[in-house]
Length: 201
Image 1 (cartoon, one colour):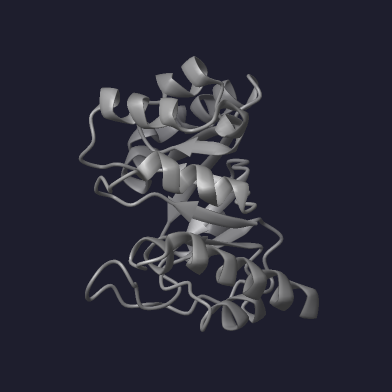
Image 2 (image 1 turned 90 degrees about the vertical axis):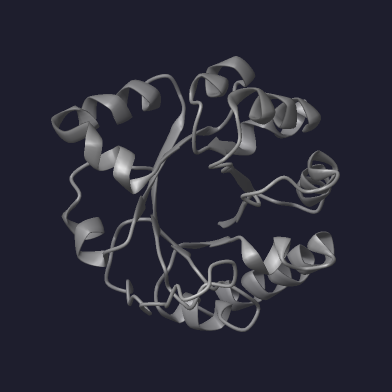
């Protein structure tokens, strides 16, 4: 699974870019706008073709998931930890409604110790981040894990082969797409690279 995470800030013709990525075969899109309002996120979702809504994961404003019948929700690490003993019931409440639930982790040991049945785990940073300065990679080796762990952080054409060899079941990309002058072209190259390397395993 190759996931694309949205740009943190607003970009020109963003919905058009996202629709284009879906047209090119994007499997899953994480909508993450830390500084965005609920209405801004709603407007962006409305700009995305309805047939793609079931491929969108939300990082905030979870009510929009039901409003637009999206794929599911993603829990930030701080939010997940803040749930405490309510974590299992919270996750289950969404999964029982047919939504996918994922969460962020920054420790492989914590992923392995997690007793909650997340649909997948976003583990970062695998490599030095492209979008965040001084965010150094940890090079997690998850080859022995039976969980569906998706690598995030510094994922690019150059690092995908290594990430596959480290055992990641999927990869999440941000900077390699949105820092590019041609997001669609960059996505196509990433997709080809990812598919080729997965076939080698």
